[in-house]
Length: 349
Image (cartoon, rainbow, N blue to C red):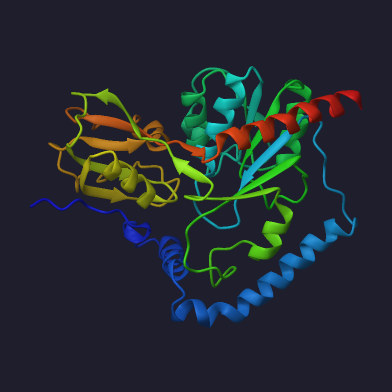
């Protein structure tokens, strides 16, 4: 009897690089409220004190946050790692564009040379080594949507105002970027057992503080649901329902990807899971995967994988994962009405 392989967040392959070992230690610590988490809890209180002090600088008006000149929506979270922000950013962008509204996406370009500062990405296909995996993925999936890449969200907002004044700017991440004050802040809460702050847990700020700053808090199941996964064949024979497949991914929540495939009827029997944003360029990356099994990857991972030279003969498919608000008929009218009022208000300034 065949048992499908269930990807778990801690299935990331071990590496002898000291930095990766440290990272894996914290990933393991943050997964549960184990002994290591409790031992680190006193330092977590110090971290919270520092964060509250940093936040107070803006709340008391000692420093002024930048107010964007274009309507700006932040899709963020409170935890380190993936929470589904990017799929939800895509869902909002696609919906707004379907209603005739113009969208520009701001993404950090994490791990790329464009991470520092902010730059308007050129039209056409992007070089992943320059612009990063998420930026390249956005351009592949939304080829006509302008992109601003870089961690400096204030500069991104200024570029949006200069180049895309009639657009809505969607910020993928950046909720803790206090130098900017988005018009709407939506945070996605992942399913986690450990609710401690750094370094004892994955939270970047206390939950109660983060929730109070957000306009909307959304959780999977109650507020967000996954759409049925769609499969795009890119090499070899099309993938049939019920097929045994191998999985390769480097995303924040690999178990969510695996669950979506299992729900769609595919049997995940082998997997290689790397840390989020891994370049997928290791020479032995595919050696652990049966070359006779169809290989299924995410859209974010395929933009990196397609640069490899040793893919000949493999069947490769992209699994497109999307989420949607559970109550679309309430959520989208809410966000559209705010955007329309913001356009009037900001244009009148």
